[in-house]
Image 1: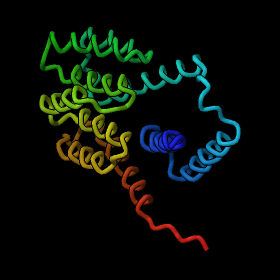
Image 2 (image 1 turned 180 degrees about the vertical axis):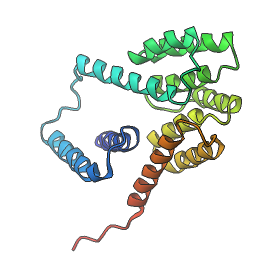
Image 3 (image 1 turned 60 degrees about the horizontal axis):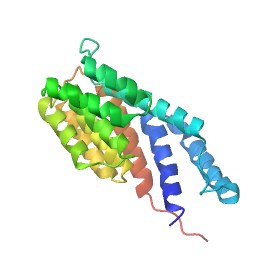
Length: 215
């Protein structure tokens, strides 16, 4: 069981590269091989009990926070500026401080309970604060955002992404399809989500392919 979290982490890195970072399909084999060699190297030289480098961890959290804020903003037009509470919360989210960020997003909701982006930002922050786990509060935030603005695919996209991280890609696909069906034809984010859905389908197809028995 010691290796299970490591293998799952490698799988999550592969999925993130393909879907979030839009890695070309021609590079999938190379990335997969790289991860396999990395696991092999860790098996020989790794130290699971040793603490990771604080600087490296901080850099990773900052990069992740920046990507999440940017991805969320893609679902809102340039003319839909976030409230001051959201903008302040985003500063903490970019640094990986999701607890502080969620508190500020909650202030935005208290000020305007119909603020779709505040609910969406809250859901994302709660998932990240729970280390990728979908909590009831996070699910409620995503559902509230979807109810307020059904044509905005942000809530279904990020909720689906959370299910994907939890190992349930079928739920992810269902949510992303729903998001596209409800989206306006001229939605700026529609093309990107369609592409990510196609890549998810390709991954699911690869996972469903039978493997040849070892001779």
